[in-house]
Amino acid sequence: MNEVTGPKVLAIYLPQFHETPDNNRWWGKGFTDWQPVRTAESYFPQHQEPRVPLDHHYYDLSQKETMVRQAQLAQQYGIDGFCFYHYYFKNGKLELELPAENLLKWKDIHMPFCFNWASESWIRSWSRISGNVWAEKYESSEADGDRGVLVEQSYGIYDDWVKHFEYLLPFFEDDRYIKIDGKPIFIFYSPEDMKYLWEMTECWRRLAKNAGFPDLYLIGAHLNTANDCLDAAIIYEPRNSMNKVNEDGGSTINHGVRCYEYGDIWENILNTPPVFGCKTYFCAVSGYDDTPRRGRMGECLIHDSPCLFQQFLSDLLNKSIQYNNEFVFINAWNEWGEGMYLEPDETCGYGYLEAVKNAKMNMEKVHQHFVERNDNGIIKKELDQLNYNVKKFKQLFNLLDKWLFLEQEERCDFSAFFKEKGIENIAIYGMAALGKHLLIQLRKEDLNVLFGIDRYAGQFGSDFKVYHPEEAFPETDAVVITAYDNVSISEELQSRHAFRIFSLEEIIDAMMRNES
Image (cartoon, rainbow, N blue to C red; front, side, top):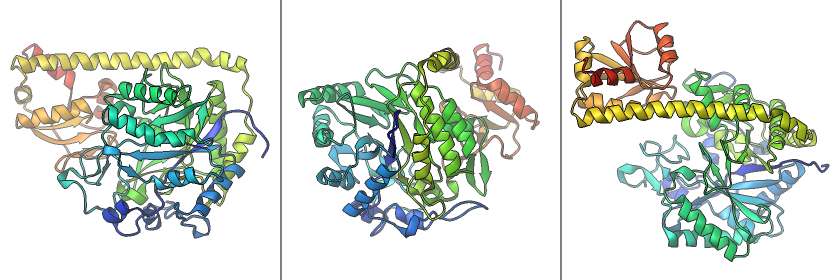
């Protein structure tokens, strides 16, 4: 293809499609991510499942010819490199390391690459702890007791960091490893979960310089603000935009599956500003459908197509030029179990790869005056979001301060407040941190909490149902709103329901005034 200036396109790469001893033990002999892909079900009209690779090519990543073919496709269609998920757990345990280690040996394969440390524990589907679940439709017989842990993550201490770096060093030294100004790039998928991130990154930077590199170029995903330990951020899609669209009430439930319009997700991707105060890379998405792994509890994008993808990717490349970004990431090259892939399939053929090639060939050169013309709008958008967050967290802090004071003074008495008003049955709107603590407190006071309401509907524990705001939910005497935007939420609820509505803040204030 013709040489095109602009950001390089890096596709996120899942190294799951080969047999491993742990997968055999947990999920059954021969398990790879192809199993949920092959057995996927269609749950509603026009639901495109199961997805089938072109010519039924259910490949094996342990085979050299597979990776040779992938590298050739990438070169042919404008993919500049692969961002491999890197799985490194407690005490240096590795998972799915074979494709990258083979690539390190197979120097004749032209496949530029970098690493993205997916640093979560692996868990069983029924576990209450957070982590990565490969396939909720399958269960493991060898989890860690009742905790549901398959492989535990621990970031370790100094000696563990050195050992991890020493494992990575041969990859960093490979000429194909992707670098910025000679600095190997490395992505932390969950940096805010790492207690000693500053100490670890300082250790790694020192070791990198001792190894002859000018430094490392460290990128953090899922960041809310700039982090001094890191050089840049990446906004991970489609999860970031799915969360935003869902919060705004833009998703629908179709035969149990939560659905999002492809255009709505991309509108949010294109309008999302950088992480405030931080160099930020953007992420494209070809599609999404995790029902092969999660069944009717899954989510998917609808009305996606190669044509739309090409149009939106062109816009994202131009957006990235405005911010002088070296890369655009695409999620993903081969995440078949979540419907995110560029590889050819039986439905669209090479359509998504052609879309990448065409988007790069049609990339507009954005001039500096265009960037300058948009600077004021960009900064205003960032400042508006920052001001909103400041107000939100200030209110949260003040509310928690009053709640703790009432606890210390032994004046926290929700039961008295509701008894005085003749209220017996209660629901909670907003099941984030405040909602969870309120549920615990109300149960401790033997109050009858019937259910929760939240954009993230589902089961909260074994005996507490959480409804989506747009769903029909049971009658109750009162709803307590714990969310920040309680005025607009209250107005919406009052337009459709007759129950009494209180904000958590007004209940706390009433107890502060001893009015209950």
